[in-house]
Image (cartoon, rainbow, N blue to C red):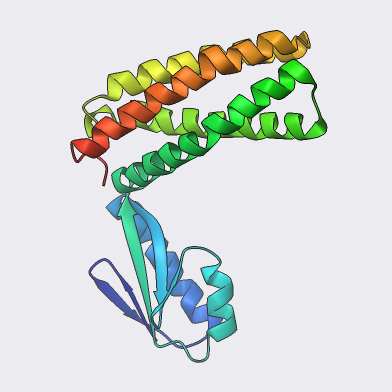
Length: 198
């Protein structure tokens, strides 16, 4: 079989051990070229996950594996697009959550709140990457402001949770998190409009 990545083509036997050896070389190449895996195309089938399982199941018949890569900047652009989509879906859910906190909290409310905290952590981590690579986005300083606001708001949410103050929690979601989400969505849109994010 052939394994193609960047400008390299590797030939190997259709055996797991041989493929493993080539993938070790592929990993070194990714590190040297400062890129990351994007997807695998195995005999025309595009995979974004579980490619190792697919290879094991089809090892005897595979002819060509094309490994598609992206730079960290391209991955960050994709991440910003995902964050934009997440924000669009999250804002109406936060509105519902606010109503539930005012009226009566269920386990489902707490589950949604927990998911929101996970989403916030993902956003913070992504904004940290932008902060580490400010030359990628001309409005990186605006992303930093949003990140600082979100970090402050997470502390407010934690304090409200610890004191079990549902009104304070609702207010923080409604008057702090939603406006920050809207500000972040605006900054991402500005980058999309100016061609900074594809």
